[in-house]
Image (tube, rainbow, N blue to C red):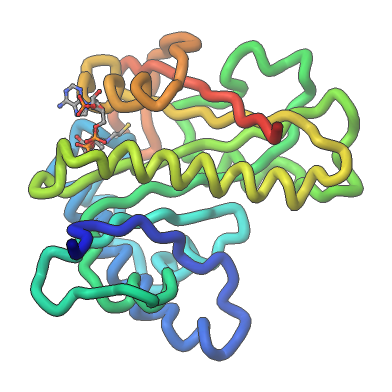
Length: 242
Ligand SMILES: CC(C)(COP(=O)(O)OP(=O)(O)OC[C@H]1O[C@@H](n2cnc3c(N)ncnc32)[C@H](O)[C@@H]1OP(=O)(O)O)[C@@H](O)C(=O)NCCC(=O)NCCS
């Protein structure tokens, strides 16, 4: 039977001509679904539609080319003719409509003695917090360091909800983190973890993260980059390479 949905990873690098030629198309699709998410569920995100609708095409492209970003997308294959058998992630992402997204941001190195809390502020942009941290390389990783990632922008279109896509997007992001950790930490095998912030009263998202194994590690008041105030819960999941 044909699949209704697929989860794919967008390219991380756009320096080869074969991939670079698709950057503008992917950035346009990413922009469309992110703006739809901000419009449909304004209370779910720190940012706002008004803030991001003003972004330039270059800013959307930078979200994709950012070396600290790994985008995971759910594709809608329900339209006739959307048979994707044998196609690569990139080919599928170009051909099918986006129906869900998330992005894993990071890593940054945190000393193991400091990881008992989230080490991040929900008030600031997660992008800025990772950009401002020293970049992580295999050479700079020391024993007693953990790699921290943040998951952001989890969204599934209302017409695709309760079909397991949220869970599959998160599994995809965790898998991307694991791959990244293996690449960076070999042969040192450091530990890693992912943090996500969720509005305290966002029951679907809290239910989703808990169903995916995230644990509540505390609550904080915040004023977001988009100017919103509220209380968020920080949830964390460890990534193990074993
Ligand atoms: C939260 C969201 C991503 C869930 O997506 P989804 O594809 O419907 O989730 P799934 O089908 O994978 O659900 C997995 C589990 O999460 C939990 N869950 C999902 N939706 C839920 C809801 N409305 N109420 C309670 N629990 C819910 C359940 O445990 C569910 O398992 P079940 O269906 O076997 O009961 C989606 O509702 C959404 O986009 N909401 C608006 C944006 C948002 O809040 N993003 C999070 C920002 S922090």
